[in-house]
Length: 92
Image 1 (cartoon, rainbow, N blue to C red):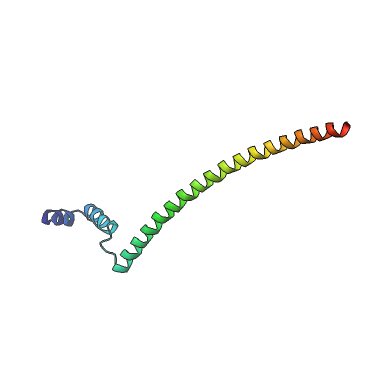
Image 2: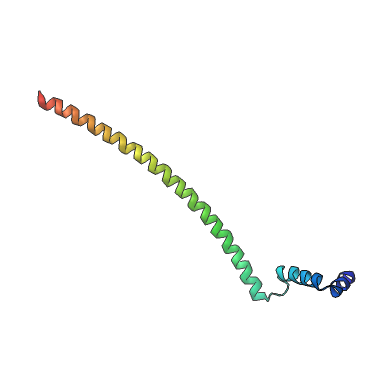
């Protein structure tokens, strides 16, 4: 540790790098700031899970929409056939 301190003391660039690393690790944060950071990290995880769930729901809705479209086409076709049969019966 003393070698590190001596080297950092001699070189301003190394000092700034070391300071930035310590700052990034949260060494200079208060307890409240550390708690807030942890809370934000938890919220981020929950939001990622929510995003994935919404993507899954979107995919399921798109699949349901395609199935409903197919069903609608089949109903329209059946309706057309029934109309044709009804017309034939009416002519007789």
